[in-house]
Length: 433
Image (cartoon, rainbow, N blue to C red; front, side):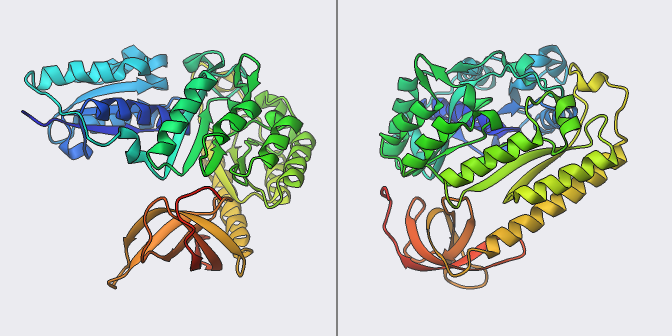
């Protein structure tokens, strides 16, 4: 029986990652072997198309996969496959485009039949969910109807639609049974989750009932951080004290041009309410630098606003024209060099805020979910790496620890990247706390 390797490569958001993990689980359930790209006869590439730069990266990834040593077939899915299937297919004769992610595993099987018709797989003895033991992204929603001026995603993914609540709970329960300690609920616009009478707050309550140790949401739009959501989050012990609330700009004129539906004062009020409901809350965000019409004054307003909010991490994107969006047609584009300089300055600001935030934990107690144990540099010991509920990165001695353990620690000093050293106090183990 021949063994054929399949490589998974994923670009873009956590929803893409969750969808890719679901495809990998389907493949693993058939006995397929997931390998590094250099060993692959088939590469499954999940693409992004949110910006022009994302398109370029996706096409580059396809060309790179085609050039791998075993000359693999490349099965391309994701948003770019939905928006421009003919353009993707034209990248090479070994490219197979499949916009429908629910049938990608089938298309891979068909591709394998071309590579090695006699290939067969043994079903694994271990449930495929176990490969995602420490943290798993679980897709609960797809689609968006916001139609922000810079974004092509509503055209690529369609209107909001929910994964049935019972299906989400069953998926989470399976992951918990396999040892997964943390679930990240993901969606393109997760605040639009609606399954009958159940919205996102009810979904969180249902997921918490599985006994999972930690629950996060990947990203939530500002206007969806409402009183009901915050009340449920505050009452749910397993809900992590971390929210990713996209800002995009701190300037009201730029927000209006983007079509974001809120102003900076409204956003600031939402963050205040969230911090009041969830003491110790860490807030992260997305910001776009150099959106069309953004003047120096507009940019300075954004930088000042970000500092006032006090984010613990900022994902900064240099504006990139995406053909088919309203913003790409504007005549007041900001020069590329200016966009780059503004993005660099915001990244530096974000790094500085993160380091200051991390330093503030010195001397406090926390529980760390161990995500990795690796050999220590230059010694015979080992080092554990993990996160707190606030998503603070922590390192500590890994002796006696395994992935999925929860270690109670005293936090120490942080390094130049904002990673905090810790001394273990106890290991409560892999259980709810």
